[in-house]
Image 1: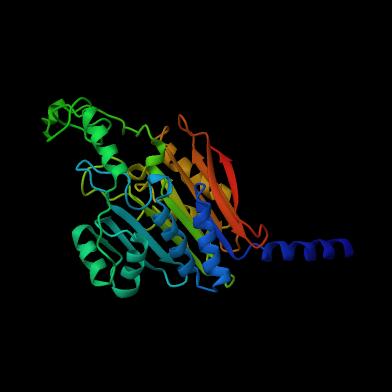
Image 2 (image 1 turned 45 degrees about the vertical axis):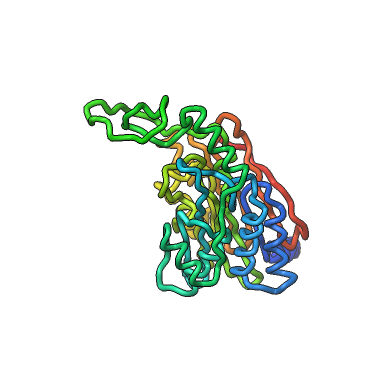
Length: 339
């Protein structure tokens, strides 16, 4: 009896030490630190911290896949997607296909706090942002222009078109629909540059147990103008519920958003499944239909336990993610093998 009692006393501090927690996709350490500083040193809320972390990546143009100057669309323009979700209130704000405003996650928070809507998109979202005091500025850079012009020189390869004329695997547009009788089954074409899918997804859990999730990205390179990916979609790009946990995804958003992997993972954790298994189950659900898709997900329970999973793909055998909590007391990059 004495040994059993000591065993439980030993476990309790370890569980409590998980909080607070900052966790994000990829190796974006400065984003992790920015979120932790806002949460712990500045004593901000988990919402403040998640916004600060994603905003840091927008400023630094993390991997060229977050913020301005990356992932130009078919017209050479960079547009942004972002979301933020408060797991205490289940309030959420998101923007998609945002033009000419750099701080996409800040605009997403403005949608959450200054409207009764969940998602604003396109030019109207940009007008809303300017009304809220966000500066309008060109998101194009020399780098993004170079990516665009090089793409034009290679006959617009790769692209996201199908069942159109001229043949999109050989030619640029403009395109027109191909007669339906000539359609053929096609697998989604994966971009050769896997970094074009490096969305930052972040989960923050405060000492008080508030769970917040946020995302920011400039989307898929050479996307069709008007495209909105999974990042600003609740349950796809991210999801947070303070009674269960949080999750955030990254990868081929056009595929992943059809399966709501973040929502699925959180609901699995609600039922008592550990975060790693919840992440793997969410990825497995997608692999059942798209065995070679590229994607990953991070998961954290309401107590601060965490895990991750990824789908194995050529050139992508392991997935790095960042963790900062009161046990590590510093940002730590961890990796998980893909399956």
